[in-house]
Image 1: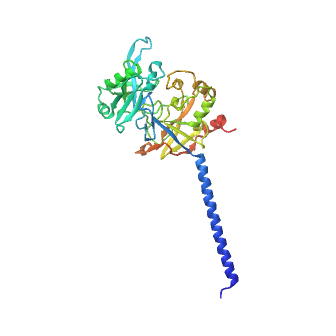
Image 2: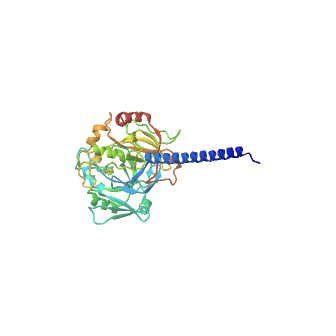
Image 3: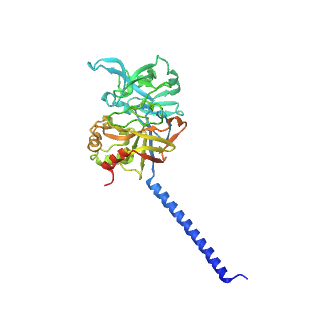
Length: 369
């Protein structure tokens, strides 16, 4: 016969264990929900993606983009060039080719050349409000011409930068661009498979090129000014616009980023302090700060010029070296691993490492008091 006291004790023990297990499971679930909500509240993610097929021309907004060692696929693989003006006599041209930039008023209509990929990215369609008909550039046909010395010309790629051998896209698109931009004798040139160019260090920034690994070659770049990718944040743009005068707010087009991020886990200008991040599945070195020039003062719609946002950036973003920064340049951490890697809008941004020196500077200037 079973001892009633033992039976009662057994029932009480089993009941206690069941209750404890239930409470523990409930605690774990609540903790998981709390952690998930906390993670979500601090989550940083990709909000916008852009490429600029023709340097200094209009942007193409994407939902996803293929990552390559030199930048997003089709980002700044073409540029408009013209003969360099003689410094002693501005009415004369030299035999040197130079890239065209809206920094010069004669080239500001480049901003209104709108590229668009059609037919499965095999054709680049160019449109402008200054020309009635769009121009279609069949990329396979153009690329097949590349490599012929007849079509090659040497041109500068940045302000005061080194020149590179580029491939001419032909007279038809050149004629269309001349009508669209008003740039006399301009040509459209692009990079071939043999093109090679390295990232450009801005000595005023003091940011050394990160060591990818022992003996690794210097990171490469397309026709972008300094680096393969440019990252900006909505938080910093919002803070800048709060500081601008009434009616002077600017949009992100002024800064021509590739990747725009946002999230409650990021403070204004905190991008300065980042050293390594993972965006989606791709890891990046957050390298050189991006100093800003007069291109940011040109309204992208009206082409009117004013002092903003440079004047306001000078009041709180100008460093001792005179650089007024907005955005950070990125370099892929393991470019040899890139195959079909893509970054998409909505991808999470994970901060892997901070630059302690830059973080201290950011905390001093912008951290919570």
